[in-house]
Image 1 (cartoon, helix red, strand yellow):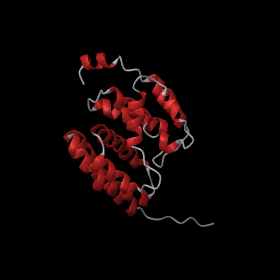
Image 2 (cartoon, one colour):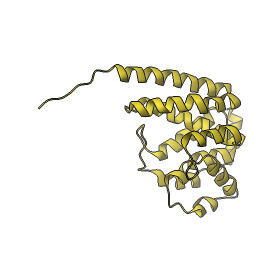
Image 3 (tube, helix red, strand yellow):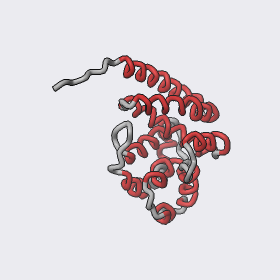
Length: 191
């Protein structure tokens, strides 16, 4: 992103979305940290790759609210600014629906998701794969690698060769991490 693009971005008012995202502080993640930081990491990934669409950036800041705050009043999101409806619609698009399996959810994004939904899902998964290096649950790590390879990598290939490369590198890195975890000896502590 050029300096000129960043200066134009200054007209995007993200603070109200960040304030709403603070509802996620304290919501832990399997990979450590909390959901609030994950929202900001996802936005940073988008900016790093040059995405400066205001709706996309705003949605990235609150993309997990609907899934993780079950009693969320939609008006909290819908009343923020003139783009609130578009942001809310994008957040809904990247949120799992009631009864939807993770596989069905990722297939839906891949097959029928809007361009922005696909970009957001890949940035979200990049953030998740980065934090996966701190997870010791072997089954979770393996499932996440497999989901990413099967469902998210094809989406990345559609939208950005650079995001695809980073995701591929993370998949390879996490596979090696998983092998190291499996190779660790089990220590049984006695009395």
